[in-house]
Length: 594
Image (tube, rainbow, N blue to C red; front, side, top):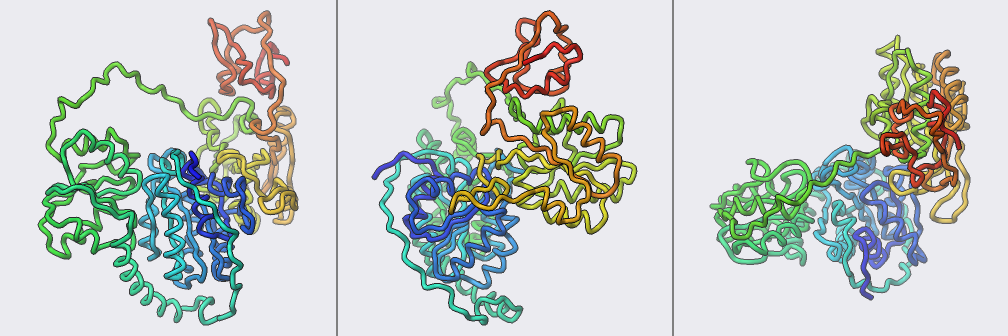
């Protein structure tokens, strides 16, 4: 059946077609919709979970694969860092059923801390990586990835990028059968228990195996060559689609697509470069293909000049596009392009839209309460990964550091031990707390840190699409489940002072923070209020025009997007307002009601 489907949906349906029995992951843009698609579609016989973090997701899937089942794990590229501990060891131990780890890269970056390249990770871990260039290809290629994984008893990385994950295309989706019952785990400590001697032996076998995989991948159907020319473009992933589009109006050139960056398909590349005098590599993120091509040219003494990111002809950072690819290709092909150029001078620039917290977001009220309570105190505010990272924006200006998930808590500890005259705050969300915050809390209590932990509990994983977590009392397998209590976990970790407050109760929230400021050690304020995207109120605030003096303090203090200037007056945009009431607490004239 032909279906118009998102790239992540195609990956999900391809994995189901491949016969997976187990799927786990941690939400992270641009990968989140893969697990969500499996959940929404028929998936009888498939165990499905949102895990607390990527490490837990991979370790559970590894056990399933060791039992002979086919298992899928999903995450974004920075999540692969969290999963790297089990992945590196699993590459040595191996698996029995197929195990594919989807690590969605984010060139730009659009919604990430880094522009790291999963192809590099595959090389580092010594495991294969597949790099789809389109939605249609992703559907087919994920099935091939499982076949290779099972054949060579190795985990395999699958690397879609944002524009493949979120693009749509018409794909011939085939029916899938309920996955076969797997053999089950067969005890064999000489195979499944990693010891130095086993790692030594398996490392040698891995290197021998990868040579065989590289040779087999040289005839892989998605490694392709188009055209005949002394000039070649080497590309992969979504960059192939950009180059293909850009070449419509340019001279004939040989187009080489490499879908399997590691193990590098050397035989394929040698044949593809036959007769090529100049080659340019157009790829996103790192110059991985370029380096491999240079190695191959040097190894076999080919008379081919190679260029790309290393010599500055292609940008190292950001996304590629048709327009960028066209400019690079025109220079490479010595095409002046005057006859093909289109006058674009009258096209207006896209307006800048910096990310902001939603109108009515309880996080804004939480940050504002801390800001008011800490006024006049020397303070450091450690942020974390989530919607609340946006607390860094003016006028709140309440995020001084943001490193990676869970680091807000542990960095606050570091500051507390080196800045003794400073109040050290750590902000984290409920989902992040379960993913990577609990360890930091235990560490803080154990090492007698002096921090105020602010947990912004909006009862969801908001930034990535409102996925459930242990604190929601809902899972993908059975629906309602045990609901983890953040306060009790803090208490069990040894936190002595824990205050739970509604951030929309501004007075009580300020008092709670001030109360914590008067004490030492690890203390916590749980700001508990649901995300307005899932529990939106019909209430609206209103401005009394007789009382309002247009001081604009409500705007300058909160930055709420529902507060605007219209015809010179402070006005509330009722299409955005949720009636949270934060602005009422700010107005010095009491001119805001509702």
